[in-house]
Every structure is written in C-alpha cells, then in structure tokens.
Length: 357
DNA sequence: AAAGCGGGGTA
DNA sequence: TACCCAGCTTT
Image (cartoon, rainbow, N blue to C red; front, side, top):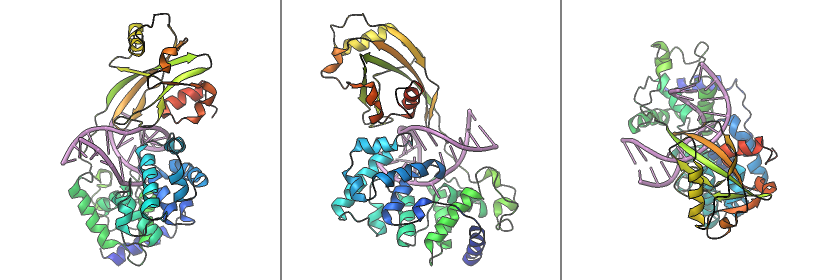
C-alpha cells in the first residue's frame, strides 16, 4: 500500500471522530510533556483528571521543579508507576538547570530527559514542535501488526523494528502530529484490542489480518508474566490520636510513598510472637503488654508482576520505643491526608474514615 | 534480553 | 482469570 493510500484511509476515518483531549488546547512542550508522562501505560480516561490537577497546581516547568517530591507523589497518588512522578520531577530540574526553564525543542534534548523514552520523545516533538517522528505505542503496534500482518512478537526488538520501519515510511511529513494523533485514535477507538470495528473499517480491503481472519491473533506477544504472592502485615500502632508511619525505601514497590510499620513474611497470618519480635528489634526492653485488638484483612491487591495479600493489625499503647533511631514517626490521624499512600492503604484509610475522600 | 514497576477496565 | 493501556529504567 502506498503512503498516500494509507494516509487517505486514515484521515478519512479520523476526520469523522471527535475526541476531547485537554492538552491539545494549547499544545506547548510543557503541556504535552505532562500529559504524555501521565498517559504512559495509562488510559486517557484514567489520566485526564490527574493532568488537569497537575496543570492547575504547577502551570510551568519552574513551578514543578520547585515543588517537593512529597507534594508531587501526593498529586500522583493512586495513578501507579510512581517512578514516572519522581523522574518528571528530576526532568523539571534538568530543564531549569540546562535549558533555562524552557522546555527543549530538539528531539535529542527531549530524549535525554529523565523518564522520556522513544515514544514520549516522538510524541512531544511531533505534537508540540512539528518534529517528524512517528510514535510507536501499544495502539500503533496493534494497527500496523494487523494491517501488514506482522507476526513477529511486538515485545521483542525484531518486532518493534518491523513496526518502526512501516511507520517511518508512512508518516505524514507535512503534518506528523496529525498522523500520530490519528494513528493512536484509530487504535484506541476502531482497531481496538478486543472487538475491533472491522466491518466498517476503511482498511478492511487491504488489512492482511482481516482478510486472513487473524485479527484476534495479532499482534503477537512473546512475554509472559508470572505473578508471585507477597504477604504484608501492617501494624496500626496507635498512641493516643497518633499512628506510626514510615516512608518506603528505594529498591522495592511504591518507592517514596508512605505506609504503616510493615512485617512481611511467607504466611497469610501473623503470630503474636512475630509482633513481639518486631518490637524487640526496636527496643529490647519492650514487654508483652501490647496485644492485637483487631485485625482487618484487605482484598487481594494486584500489581503487574505480583499479588499482594495484606492485613492490618490494630495495636494500641504508649509506643515511645519508636521515637528514637527508627524509620518510624508518629503523626496525628487527622493529618494522614498530607501523605501519599499506595492505593491498597488509601482504600483502607478511606473506608475507615481516617481520610475524608 | 529480561525483569521490575500500579492501577483500572474489559471480556 | 488474563490481557491491555499514549513505556521507561535498571540489571
């Protein structure tokens, strides 16, 4: 299929659809950047409210760079893949330091920013600066794999290269932004992963997958994820109207978010002896006057590569042992809303009235 | 090249 | 359940 034929079919479809995307109203570098980071592995419907709140709070790169990481993570709370927020913060500082606070226009400069890979660099370059770079996201890979019958796995370099070769040939050099937007809209709204709209599709006479009845078998993915189960036992340590918190460290899920004191083991249930042992690591003089007064088993939480089974154990007492030389600190329950929590804990806190939301 | 990293929607 | 979503970074 010639480029002109492809573009004709694509645009004649795209001209008929309307999709309101707030970041298109004023598609400058900062605008598009924030939206693209938020939308990485995230549906437009899920990310849009976050985008609006982000732009409201931090309208410029400089404002974002001046924010604290805690503030940014709080704004990101519930959206997942929190490294995106940390990397965006780092990139904002890069832009202030290297580019004088002005979002870079050059593709290589954009690609050099933290958290920006080939997709995001192409998206920002084309949408904000008319750069001639074709985007390759999940939508585009699906569209091209089907129309051109590419069965090389798209989660491997060879498959990616095959897709890239096609879109590099097809891209509309007169309007790369329009081309990229139309490709993604087409994948999201017509050439969908499940139940694609093949009957009325402009491409159905040339689409190899459709003609060979292979639409539901393309694209091919090789990778398979095996999920393990982890068991989290959270201690609701209450001292008067305060509870203990800690910040999650680097090297595990939810880096930079806050949580309750945590005991992790291989069991669904926690023995009292394990709690006592945990306390003794904080202060060997601790006696055994503290008892679990209540337990609350949470719903199984699902992440990309693991299942999480969590239980909250409520323990009240005068926990002075946690005041010195530990990662834990006490905060008034009424101030919990100031901290960013994983969704797992956010649900618990909200359901029990500790956070008003 | 493969693994790690969230959470929600859908069939 | 399993798969997918405007992917990137680290190992």
